[in-house]
Length: 295
Image 1 (cartoon, helix red, strand yellow):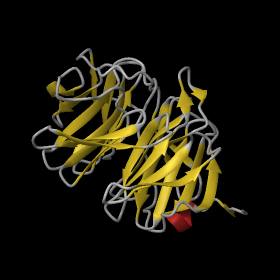
Image 2: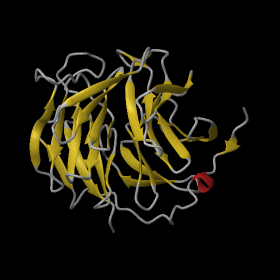
Image 3: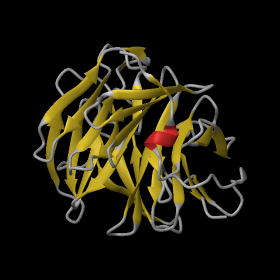
Image 4: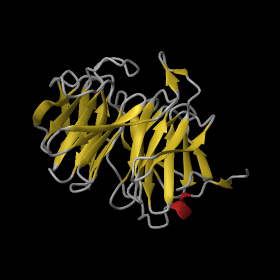
């Protein structure tokens, strides 16, 4: 299939002009030494106005049932370090990665499945299993009420497992494989309007697709190990890179604008849509950064 030259201006037609950003961490919260353990993802939970942090707590491959989810206040206070704790008898959580909240539920990527929790009661409701998967990683709400999910296709030692895929989970919980094969090791995924974006861990690409997974354009960045992917209130497309040690905006004219650099292992980004903040877990540092996008 012939791909169009990458044209984010088409896919992000509503995007506003790029604004200048500072690369300093001054006046932003940097939480460390509070008990995070391999934090891989962050998520803003709007109904309770809190931040959630997914802690792998060890190997991202091991089914050890010791992962946990932390809850923070927007001012950086740790409300409950182990708000959901895999060590509890009534919670199964191995190596939590990407998260989304939707319709009063929390969906957490966990090796070969999504764990589903009730946000109010913290009760574990269900597992959505992805048969044959190895590294379920990125999660995004779908415009129709379902979810998009990536399998990065990794085995222990971060060796290729051959399971790379993009899935759609419909509103009823049915799992549909949209794409598989050599996809560059899919990681962060985001859907908005009629467009689906995905960044890759291995090949360092941004791939733009229709909602059924048909690829429309592809951009190869000058670095790989891309992880998080979010779209802000004013339609900025933002990703993180372990290789570049930073968080970048990908502009409509295919340029990269550094938002914040000198970050060790910036993983799956969250976004506080109320305050226009990036939520950045630092995987190898057991730290998180709360970074304002305001001028």
